[in-house]
Image (cartoon, rainbow over all chains, first blue to last red; front, side, top):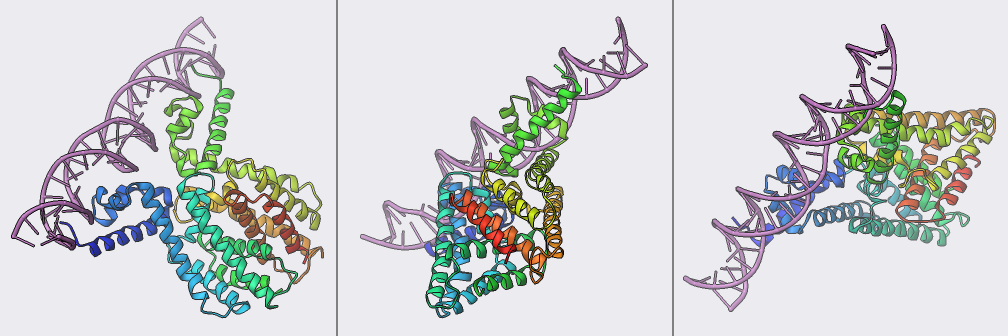
Amino acid sequence: MRRSAEAAQLTRDRIVATGVTKASSDGLHALTIGSLAEALGMSKAGVVGPFGSRAGLQSAVLAKAADMFVAAVVTPSMKAEPGLPRLRVLIDLWCGYLDGSPFPNGCFITAASCELDGRPGELRSLLLTTVTRWRAFLHEQIVIARTAGDITATLDADDLVTTLTGIAMSADQEIQLLADATAAARARRLMLAAITR
Amino acid sequence: MRRSAEAAQLTRDRIVATGVTKASSDGLHALTIGSLAEALGMSKAGVVGPFGSRAGLQSAVLAKAADMFVAAVVTPSMKAEPGLPRLRVLIDLWCGYLDGSPFPNGCFITAASCELDGRPGELRSLLLTTVTRWRAFLHEQIVIARTAGDITATLDADDLVTTLTGIAMSADQEIQLLADATAAARARRLMLAAITR
DNA sequence: CCCTTTAGCGTACGATCGTTCGTTGACTGG
DNA sequence: CCAGTCAACGAACGATCGTACGCTAAAGGG
């Protein structure tokens, strides 16, 4: 019955991956052990075992979703040269992530932010760290571009972070709720306009 | 035991009001009949009775939250004269709503949007109507201001709707998740800058 | 090769979920 | 004033929730 250690890790990955999909479409709160077990063809105990509890499972799923965002947007953008070129790539990747999302239901982090922002706990802390890190990264890339003279010195970095993040969130709503097929293209254009003003 | 017809309406209002508070802090999905009954000191049957089912109760709560947004932002803005003055008032009211929110936990509609955007059903339809109406109203006010020459003709109304909505969403995250006390003021400034460019 | 470790299963637990039902008793129109 | 309407209650239902426990059996170090 027992599989090898590597197989166990594979099982763990499979649980988290399925959990990300399920939590993406229905919310982290809907990530129940029973439904996940059924989707995986496993027993409830087998699903929750490697994570200790449902909370641990939720944390692993949220962390995985954050990793996926980083892998899809942040990491590949680092191959572009710092400054405006990297910002352009970043925007393109970001909007691509929002559009043909790896998640069935829009930006996982944004959804989690709305779901958890008022409920203190370990999950909220994890989310806060994730969002803070992303905003700090974005801020840093903007400062680099501004210092290099690639974007106007009168543009405030904090303002740009708020504006770019906002455009992404608005586009997310347009794509997911309003089914607006032109939203991603508009978001790309608006983001580029915001930094090249 | 039975109260008068007016008292019954009062009870109904009381249920919805408590439901809005609860759904605001924990999400519409967490609006359970049992917890609501306990919070109200009523029986479960008494709580769900006037609405037929839990889904009906959720619809009533979502509709009430939408009404509260309209009453706080849309309606009072109509007293200002059309064009840029009304847009200014609108922005001020909107950001005030985001800041000292009537809800314990940020914009109810934004939260509901993230929660429901991928789950077809009556609730999603109601939310879609609400969001569409709000965006259309915003669009209309922008067009009025642009036609009157109050804002630059080169600014596209759809672009502005996306930008303003986005700034609001970003500010909502900054207020609720990041606990940034300066977020509302920045949002006001960014929104004004966006329309008076 | 044996012995400890452990991945995963099956069962059971109390709690809570949404809904249904019959009952009660105060309102209200005729 | 009396009969009918109906708000609200309390109890019960089957389902599902998260967690705990004991078990099985394969893996892997000694």
